[in-house]
Image 1 (tube, rainbow, N blue to C red):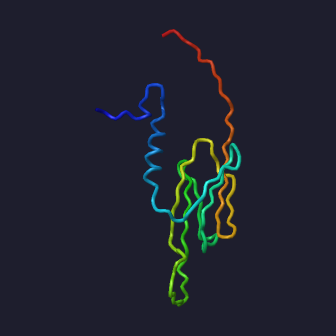
Image 2: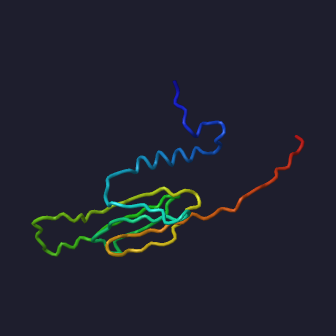
Image 3: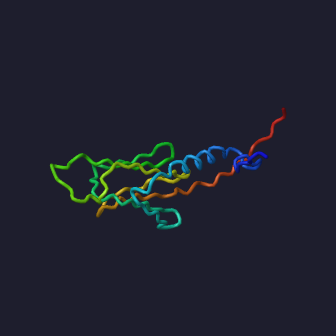
Length: 137
């Protein structure tokens, strides 16, 4: 018995890339650091909030790579000869990725009180209706 994927359905033409996006997202699950929230602030707006305590603005980078929002954090080595009796605040590097749908854009990013907020919005596409002429072959 062969496995039929949703992109192989005869009425769904050109959706093979969507299936690859789903597979890529499943592989990018990774660990739970840093923790994050995703909120829907309106019908066409979202906010991703990452808890990045201890990271300065210069320690963080946000990039769009092939419809994928990638947030990276790397803190400099600044122990200054300190001796920790307990170190419970994570200071490790991280990379967190989110696959964005077609038409979703990054509107803004802000760092406040140890939280990195990334605002996303979905652009409203213009409806496209086009008549296709029929020619004789």
